[in-house]
Length: 205
Image (cartoon, rainbow, N blue to C red):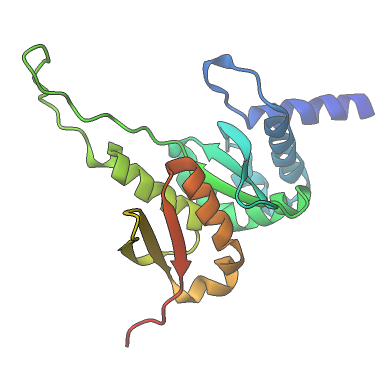
C-alpha cells in the first residue's frame, strides 16, 4: 500500500508540470511539482483550485549576495486561476522551501517590431500592444508584486544616463509585501536588466 501511495503521489506531482518540447525537468521543478501534489492532498480548502493548475518551469535566481528566490513560470491561461489561491499557495510553498521567497509570473511572448522594406511582406495585422517589450515588462512587474497594486511610477535619470524607475505600491498592502520588495527588484532586474525601487506613498486626500 505504501508503494502504491508513493507512485500515485509521484504521478500527481508530474501532472502539475507542463514542459515544452518534452525537455526533462530540473531538480527544482520536480521539487515544486511534488510540493503542489503534497498541498493538493493535505490542504483540503486548496484541493479543488490547485488540482487543474500547471506550471511551465521553475528556477532559482540570486536577488542579493545572500538571498535567492524561486521563480515559477505558469501558462498565461492559468494566471487568473493561480491568483485565486496565490497568496495562500505562496505561503505554503515558502514553508516547504525554508522561507525562500516564491514568485509566480506568467509566460508572455514578445513580438518583434515588423520590419519595413521591399523584401518584406506588408503587415496587414498590427502587432498587439500586449506583445511589445514595454507591455510585457509592465505585465511582469504586475505579476511580481501581486496581490499589491501598482498605483504610480516615476522615472529618474542618473548622472551616468541610466534610468531608475520608482514604483509606487498601494499603501494598504505595505505590511504584506514590503519585506519582499528587494526580491521583486532583484528578480525584475535579472529578467529585464532594468533597475527599480519600490515606495508606498501616502494616498492623496
